[in-house]
Image 1 (cartoon, helix red, strand yellow):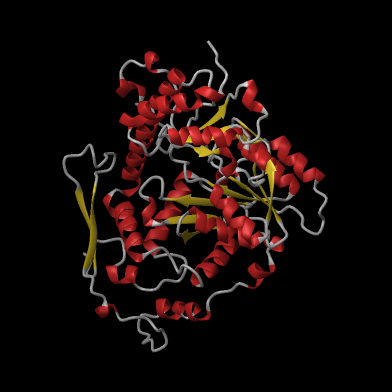
Image 2: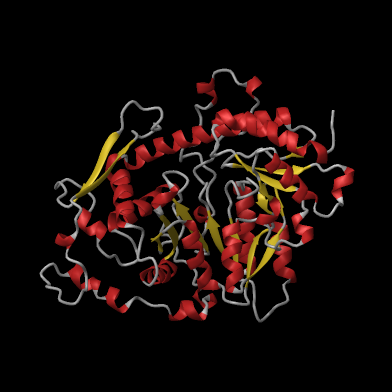
Length: 472
């Protein structure tokens, strides 16, 4: 097998804070404890495990590939202070103790193995480090390369938590035009070519390449190659925020064209047929990939990981050591036991197929109803992944240039007992009157009961009726 190259070094782009960030002095001493089992430590101010009142933690979980709603009995999972000799994960005491910012080893090992199996980063010195999910990971990746006065490249519509993070930090945003596959490479290249602030050069681009929030756009592999080529040409580091990566499914077909439902959903991508990630084509080590269990296990676990060159994951580890430490020990214990022993990699893939099927069924039902009830009121691109539809409201001529038109639309939705998110909330350009009147709203088909879909869509149609064009 050919030897993988070493990553390029982008540490010259680090902020001053990133350059001086180092291993916590106290955390740095743990290497001696780990290296020498005969060492008696009188240095570490760690609580003694005998003082923990927990002998065992556990959960009842669905068998791999089943949902709790569809299985007759759950499987028990437990992590004990006295694990069996055959266990491949640590004792509960280890999970409940302070950590070093990189995560409990068995949890990190699964993340590393999974990353190699799915993405196989094409450079040698990649590594993983734990996070509390992708928003936590984003903040730490951002602070490595952007400081007050710098500019982050983003999609023209983007995740509000990113906007809410960047603005108070004094970091500006440069929005890039999108199409049905997300960020447009030519527009990104043009932005970089025309950038004139030499004191604050563009260093970093943020994107959600799969099921983009809010638009639902998913980049093809060709689009990813084109974006990556611009990043190489313009010297950019990319944050690949991909929480919806595993929620990919087949293209939509109307219910009238579907025969047997089991046959319809028999060829979901699982892991093997997913669109390859930016990380998987990252020959330079310029992609910082953010992964999370939030959309595929549960968001309250607050568990994720970051993949990047080791000199970058080291800096994130050092940041963890003075902030979150690591994800909660109980969460890491449950995830590690589930992934390493209960399900394993094959069971994990069966679970992902079951999740993909759930969201594919939801997407198809939701789109069926939108096409039935919203004709002439909105248009939208049908997503091939994720949780969202991005509606462009077809305002009639009286409303198109009326100040406050979309506020009237929102008020009408609330009066008709249906809630969608106004488009302006996703705009990096703020909430000026011009932005607030852009005719976009986001619908999520992920949470509401499918029994309520038709109720919600007919209410939305009624709410939009006074404001929209009528098309026969």
